[in-house]
Amino acid sequence: DERGAIILNEDGEKETATFQQVFAKKVAGILQELYEANTDIKTQFVLVPSVDDAISDSVYPQPPMVDLEVKTKGAAAFGSLGLHAVEMAGRETSTGNRPKRVHCVSNPCTLRINDVTIGVTSSDVLFHISSDETNANLPPGSRLARIAEHLLH
Image 1: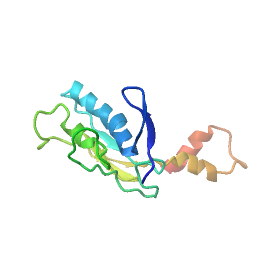
Image 2 (image 1 turned 120 degrees about the vertical axis):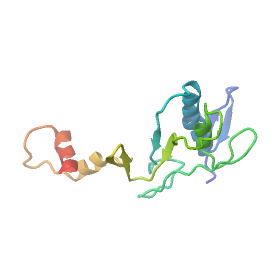
Image 3 (image 1 turned 180 degrees about the horizontal axis):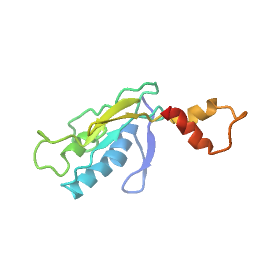
Image 4 (image 1 turned 135 degrees about the vertical axis):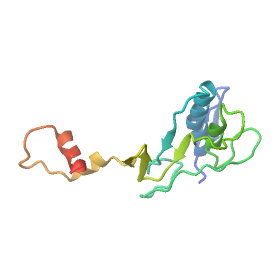
């Protein structure tokens, strides 16, 4: 994709960057700083793509985001989301048997965390359900609570 974003560099001048480069700086860069400042942190992040993302396929269901580890000097290469740097941040050697810090999953997906299975999607399910709901002869009460009940029943 030839599109890109107009961003301000360190000198305050405008320059063009790929959406992957913006992600690497704004998302992966912040995660990398977090892990470098807190080397003992055990927090893990789950990245779920959205059909509105500029770096993800606009199809549903969506595959996980892919970070191409590209060896370059200087700026991140095309395709690199910078997530490989997050895995190494604050660690003296390779990741080895250490748990992953960032998990890229599909949209939708199910996650199993400590024997609890959770369904995840970046789609606004409540919005889609509410657009199909009619208001005729409904009992009084919270509309949001009534819509959320559809998910649980």
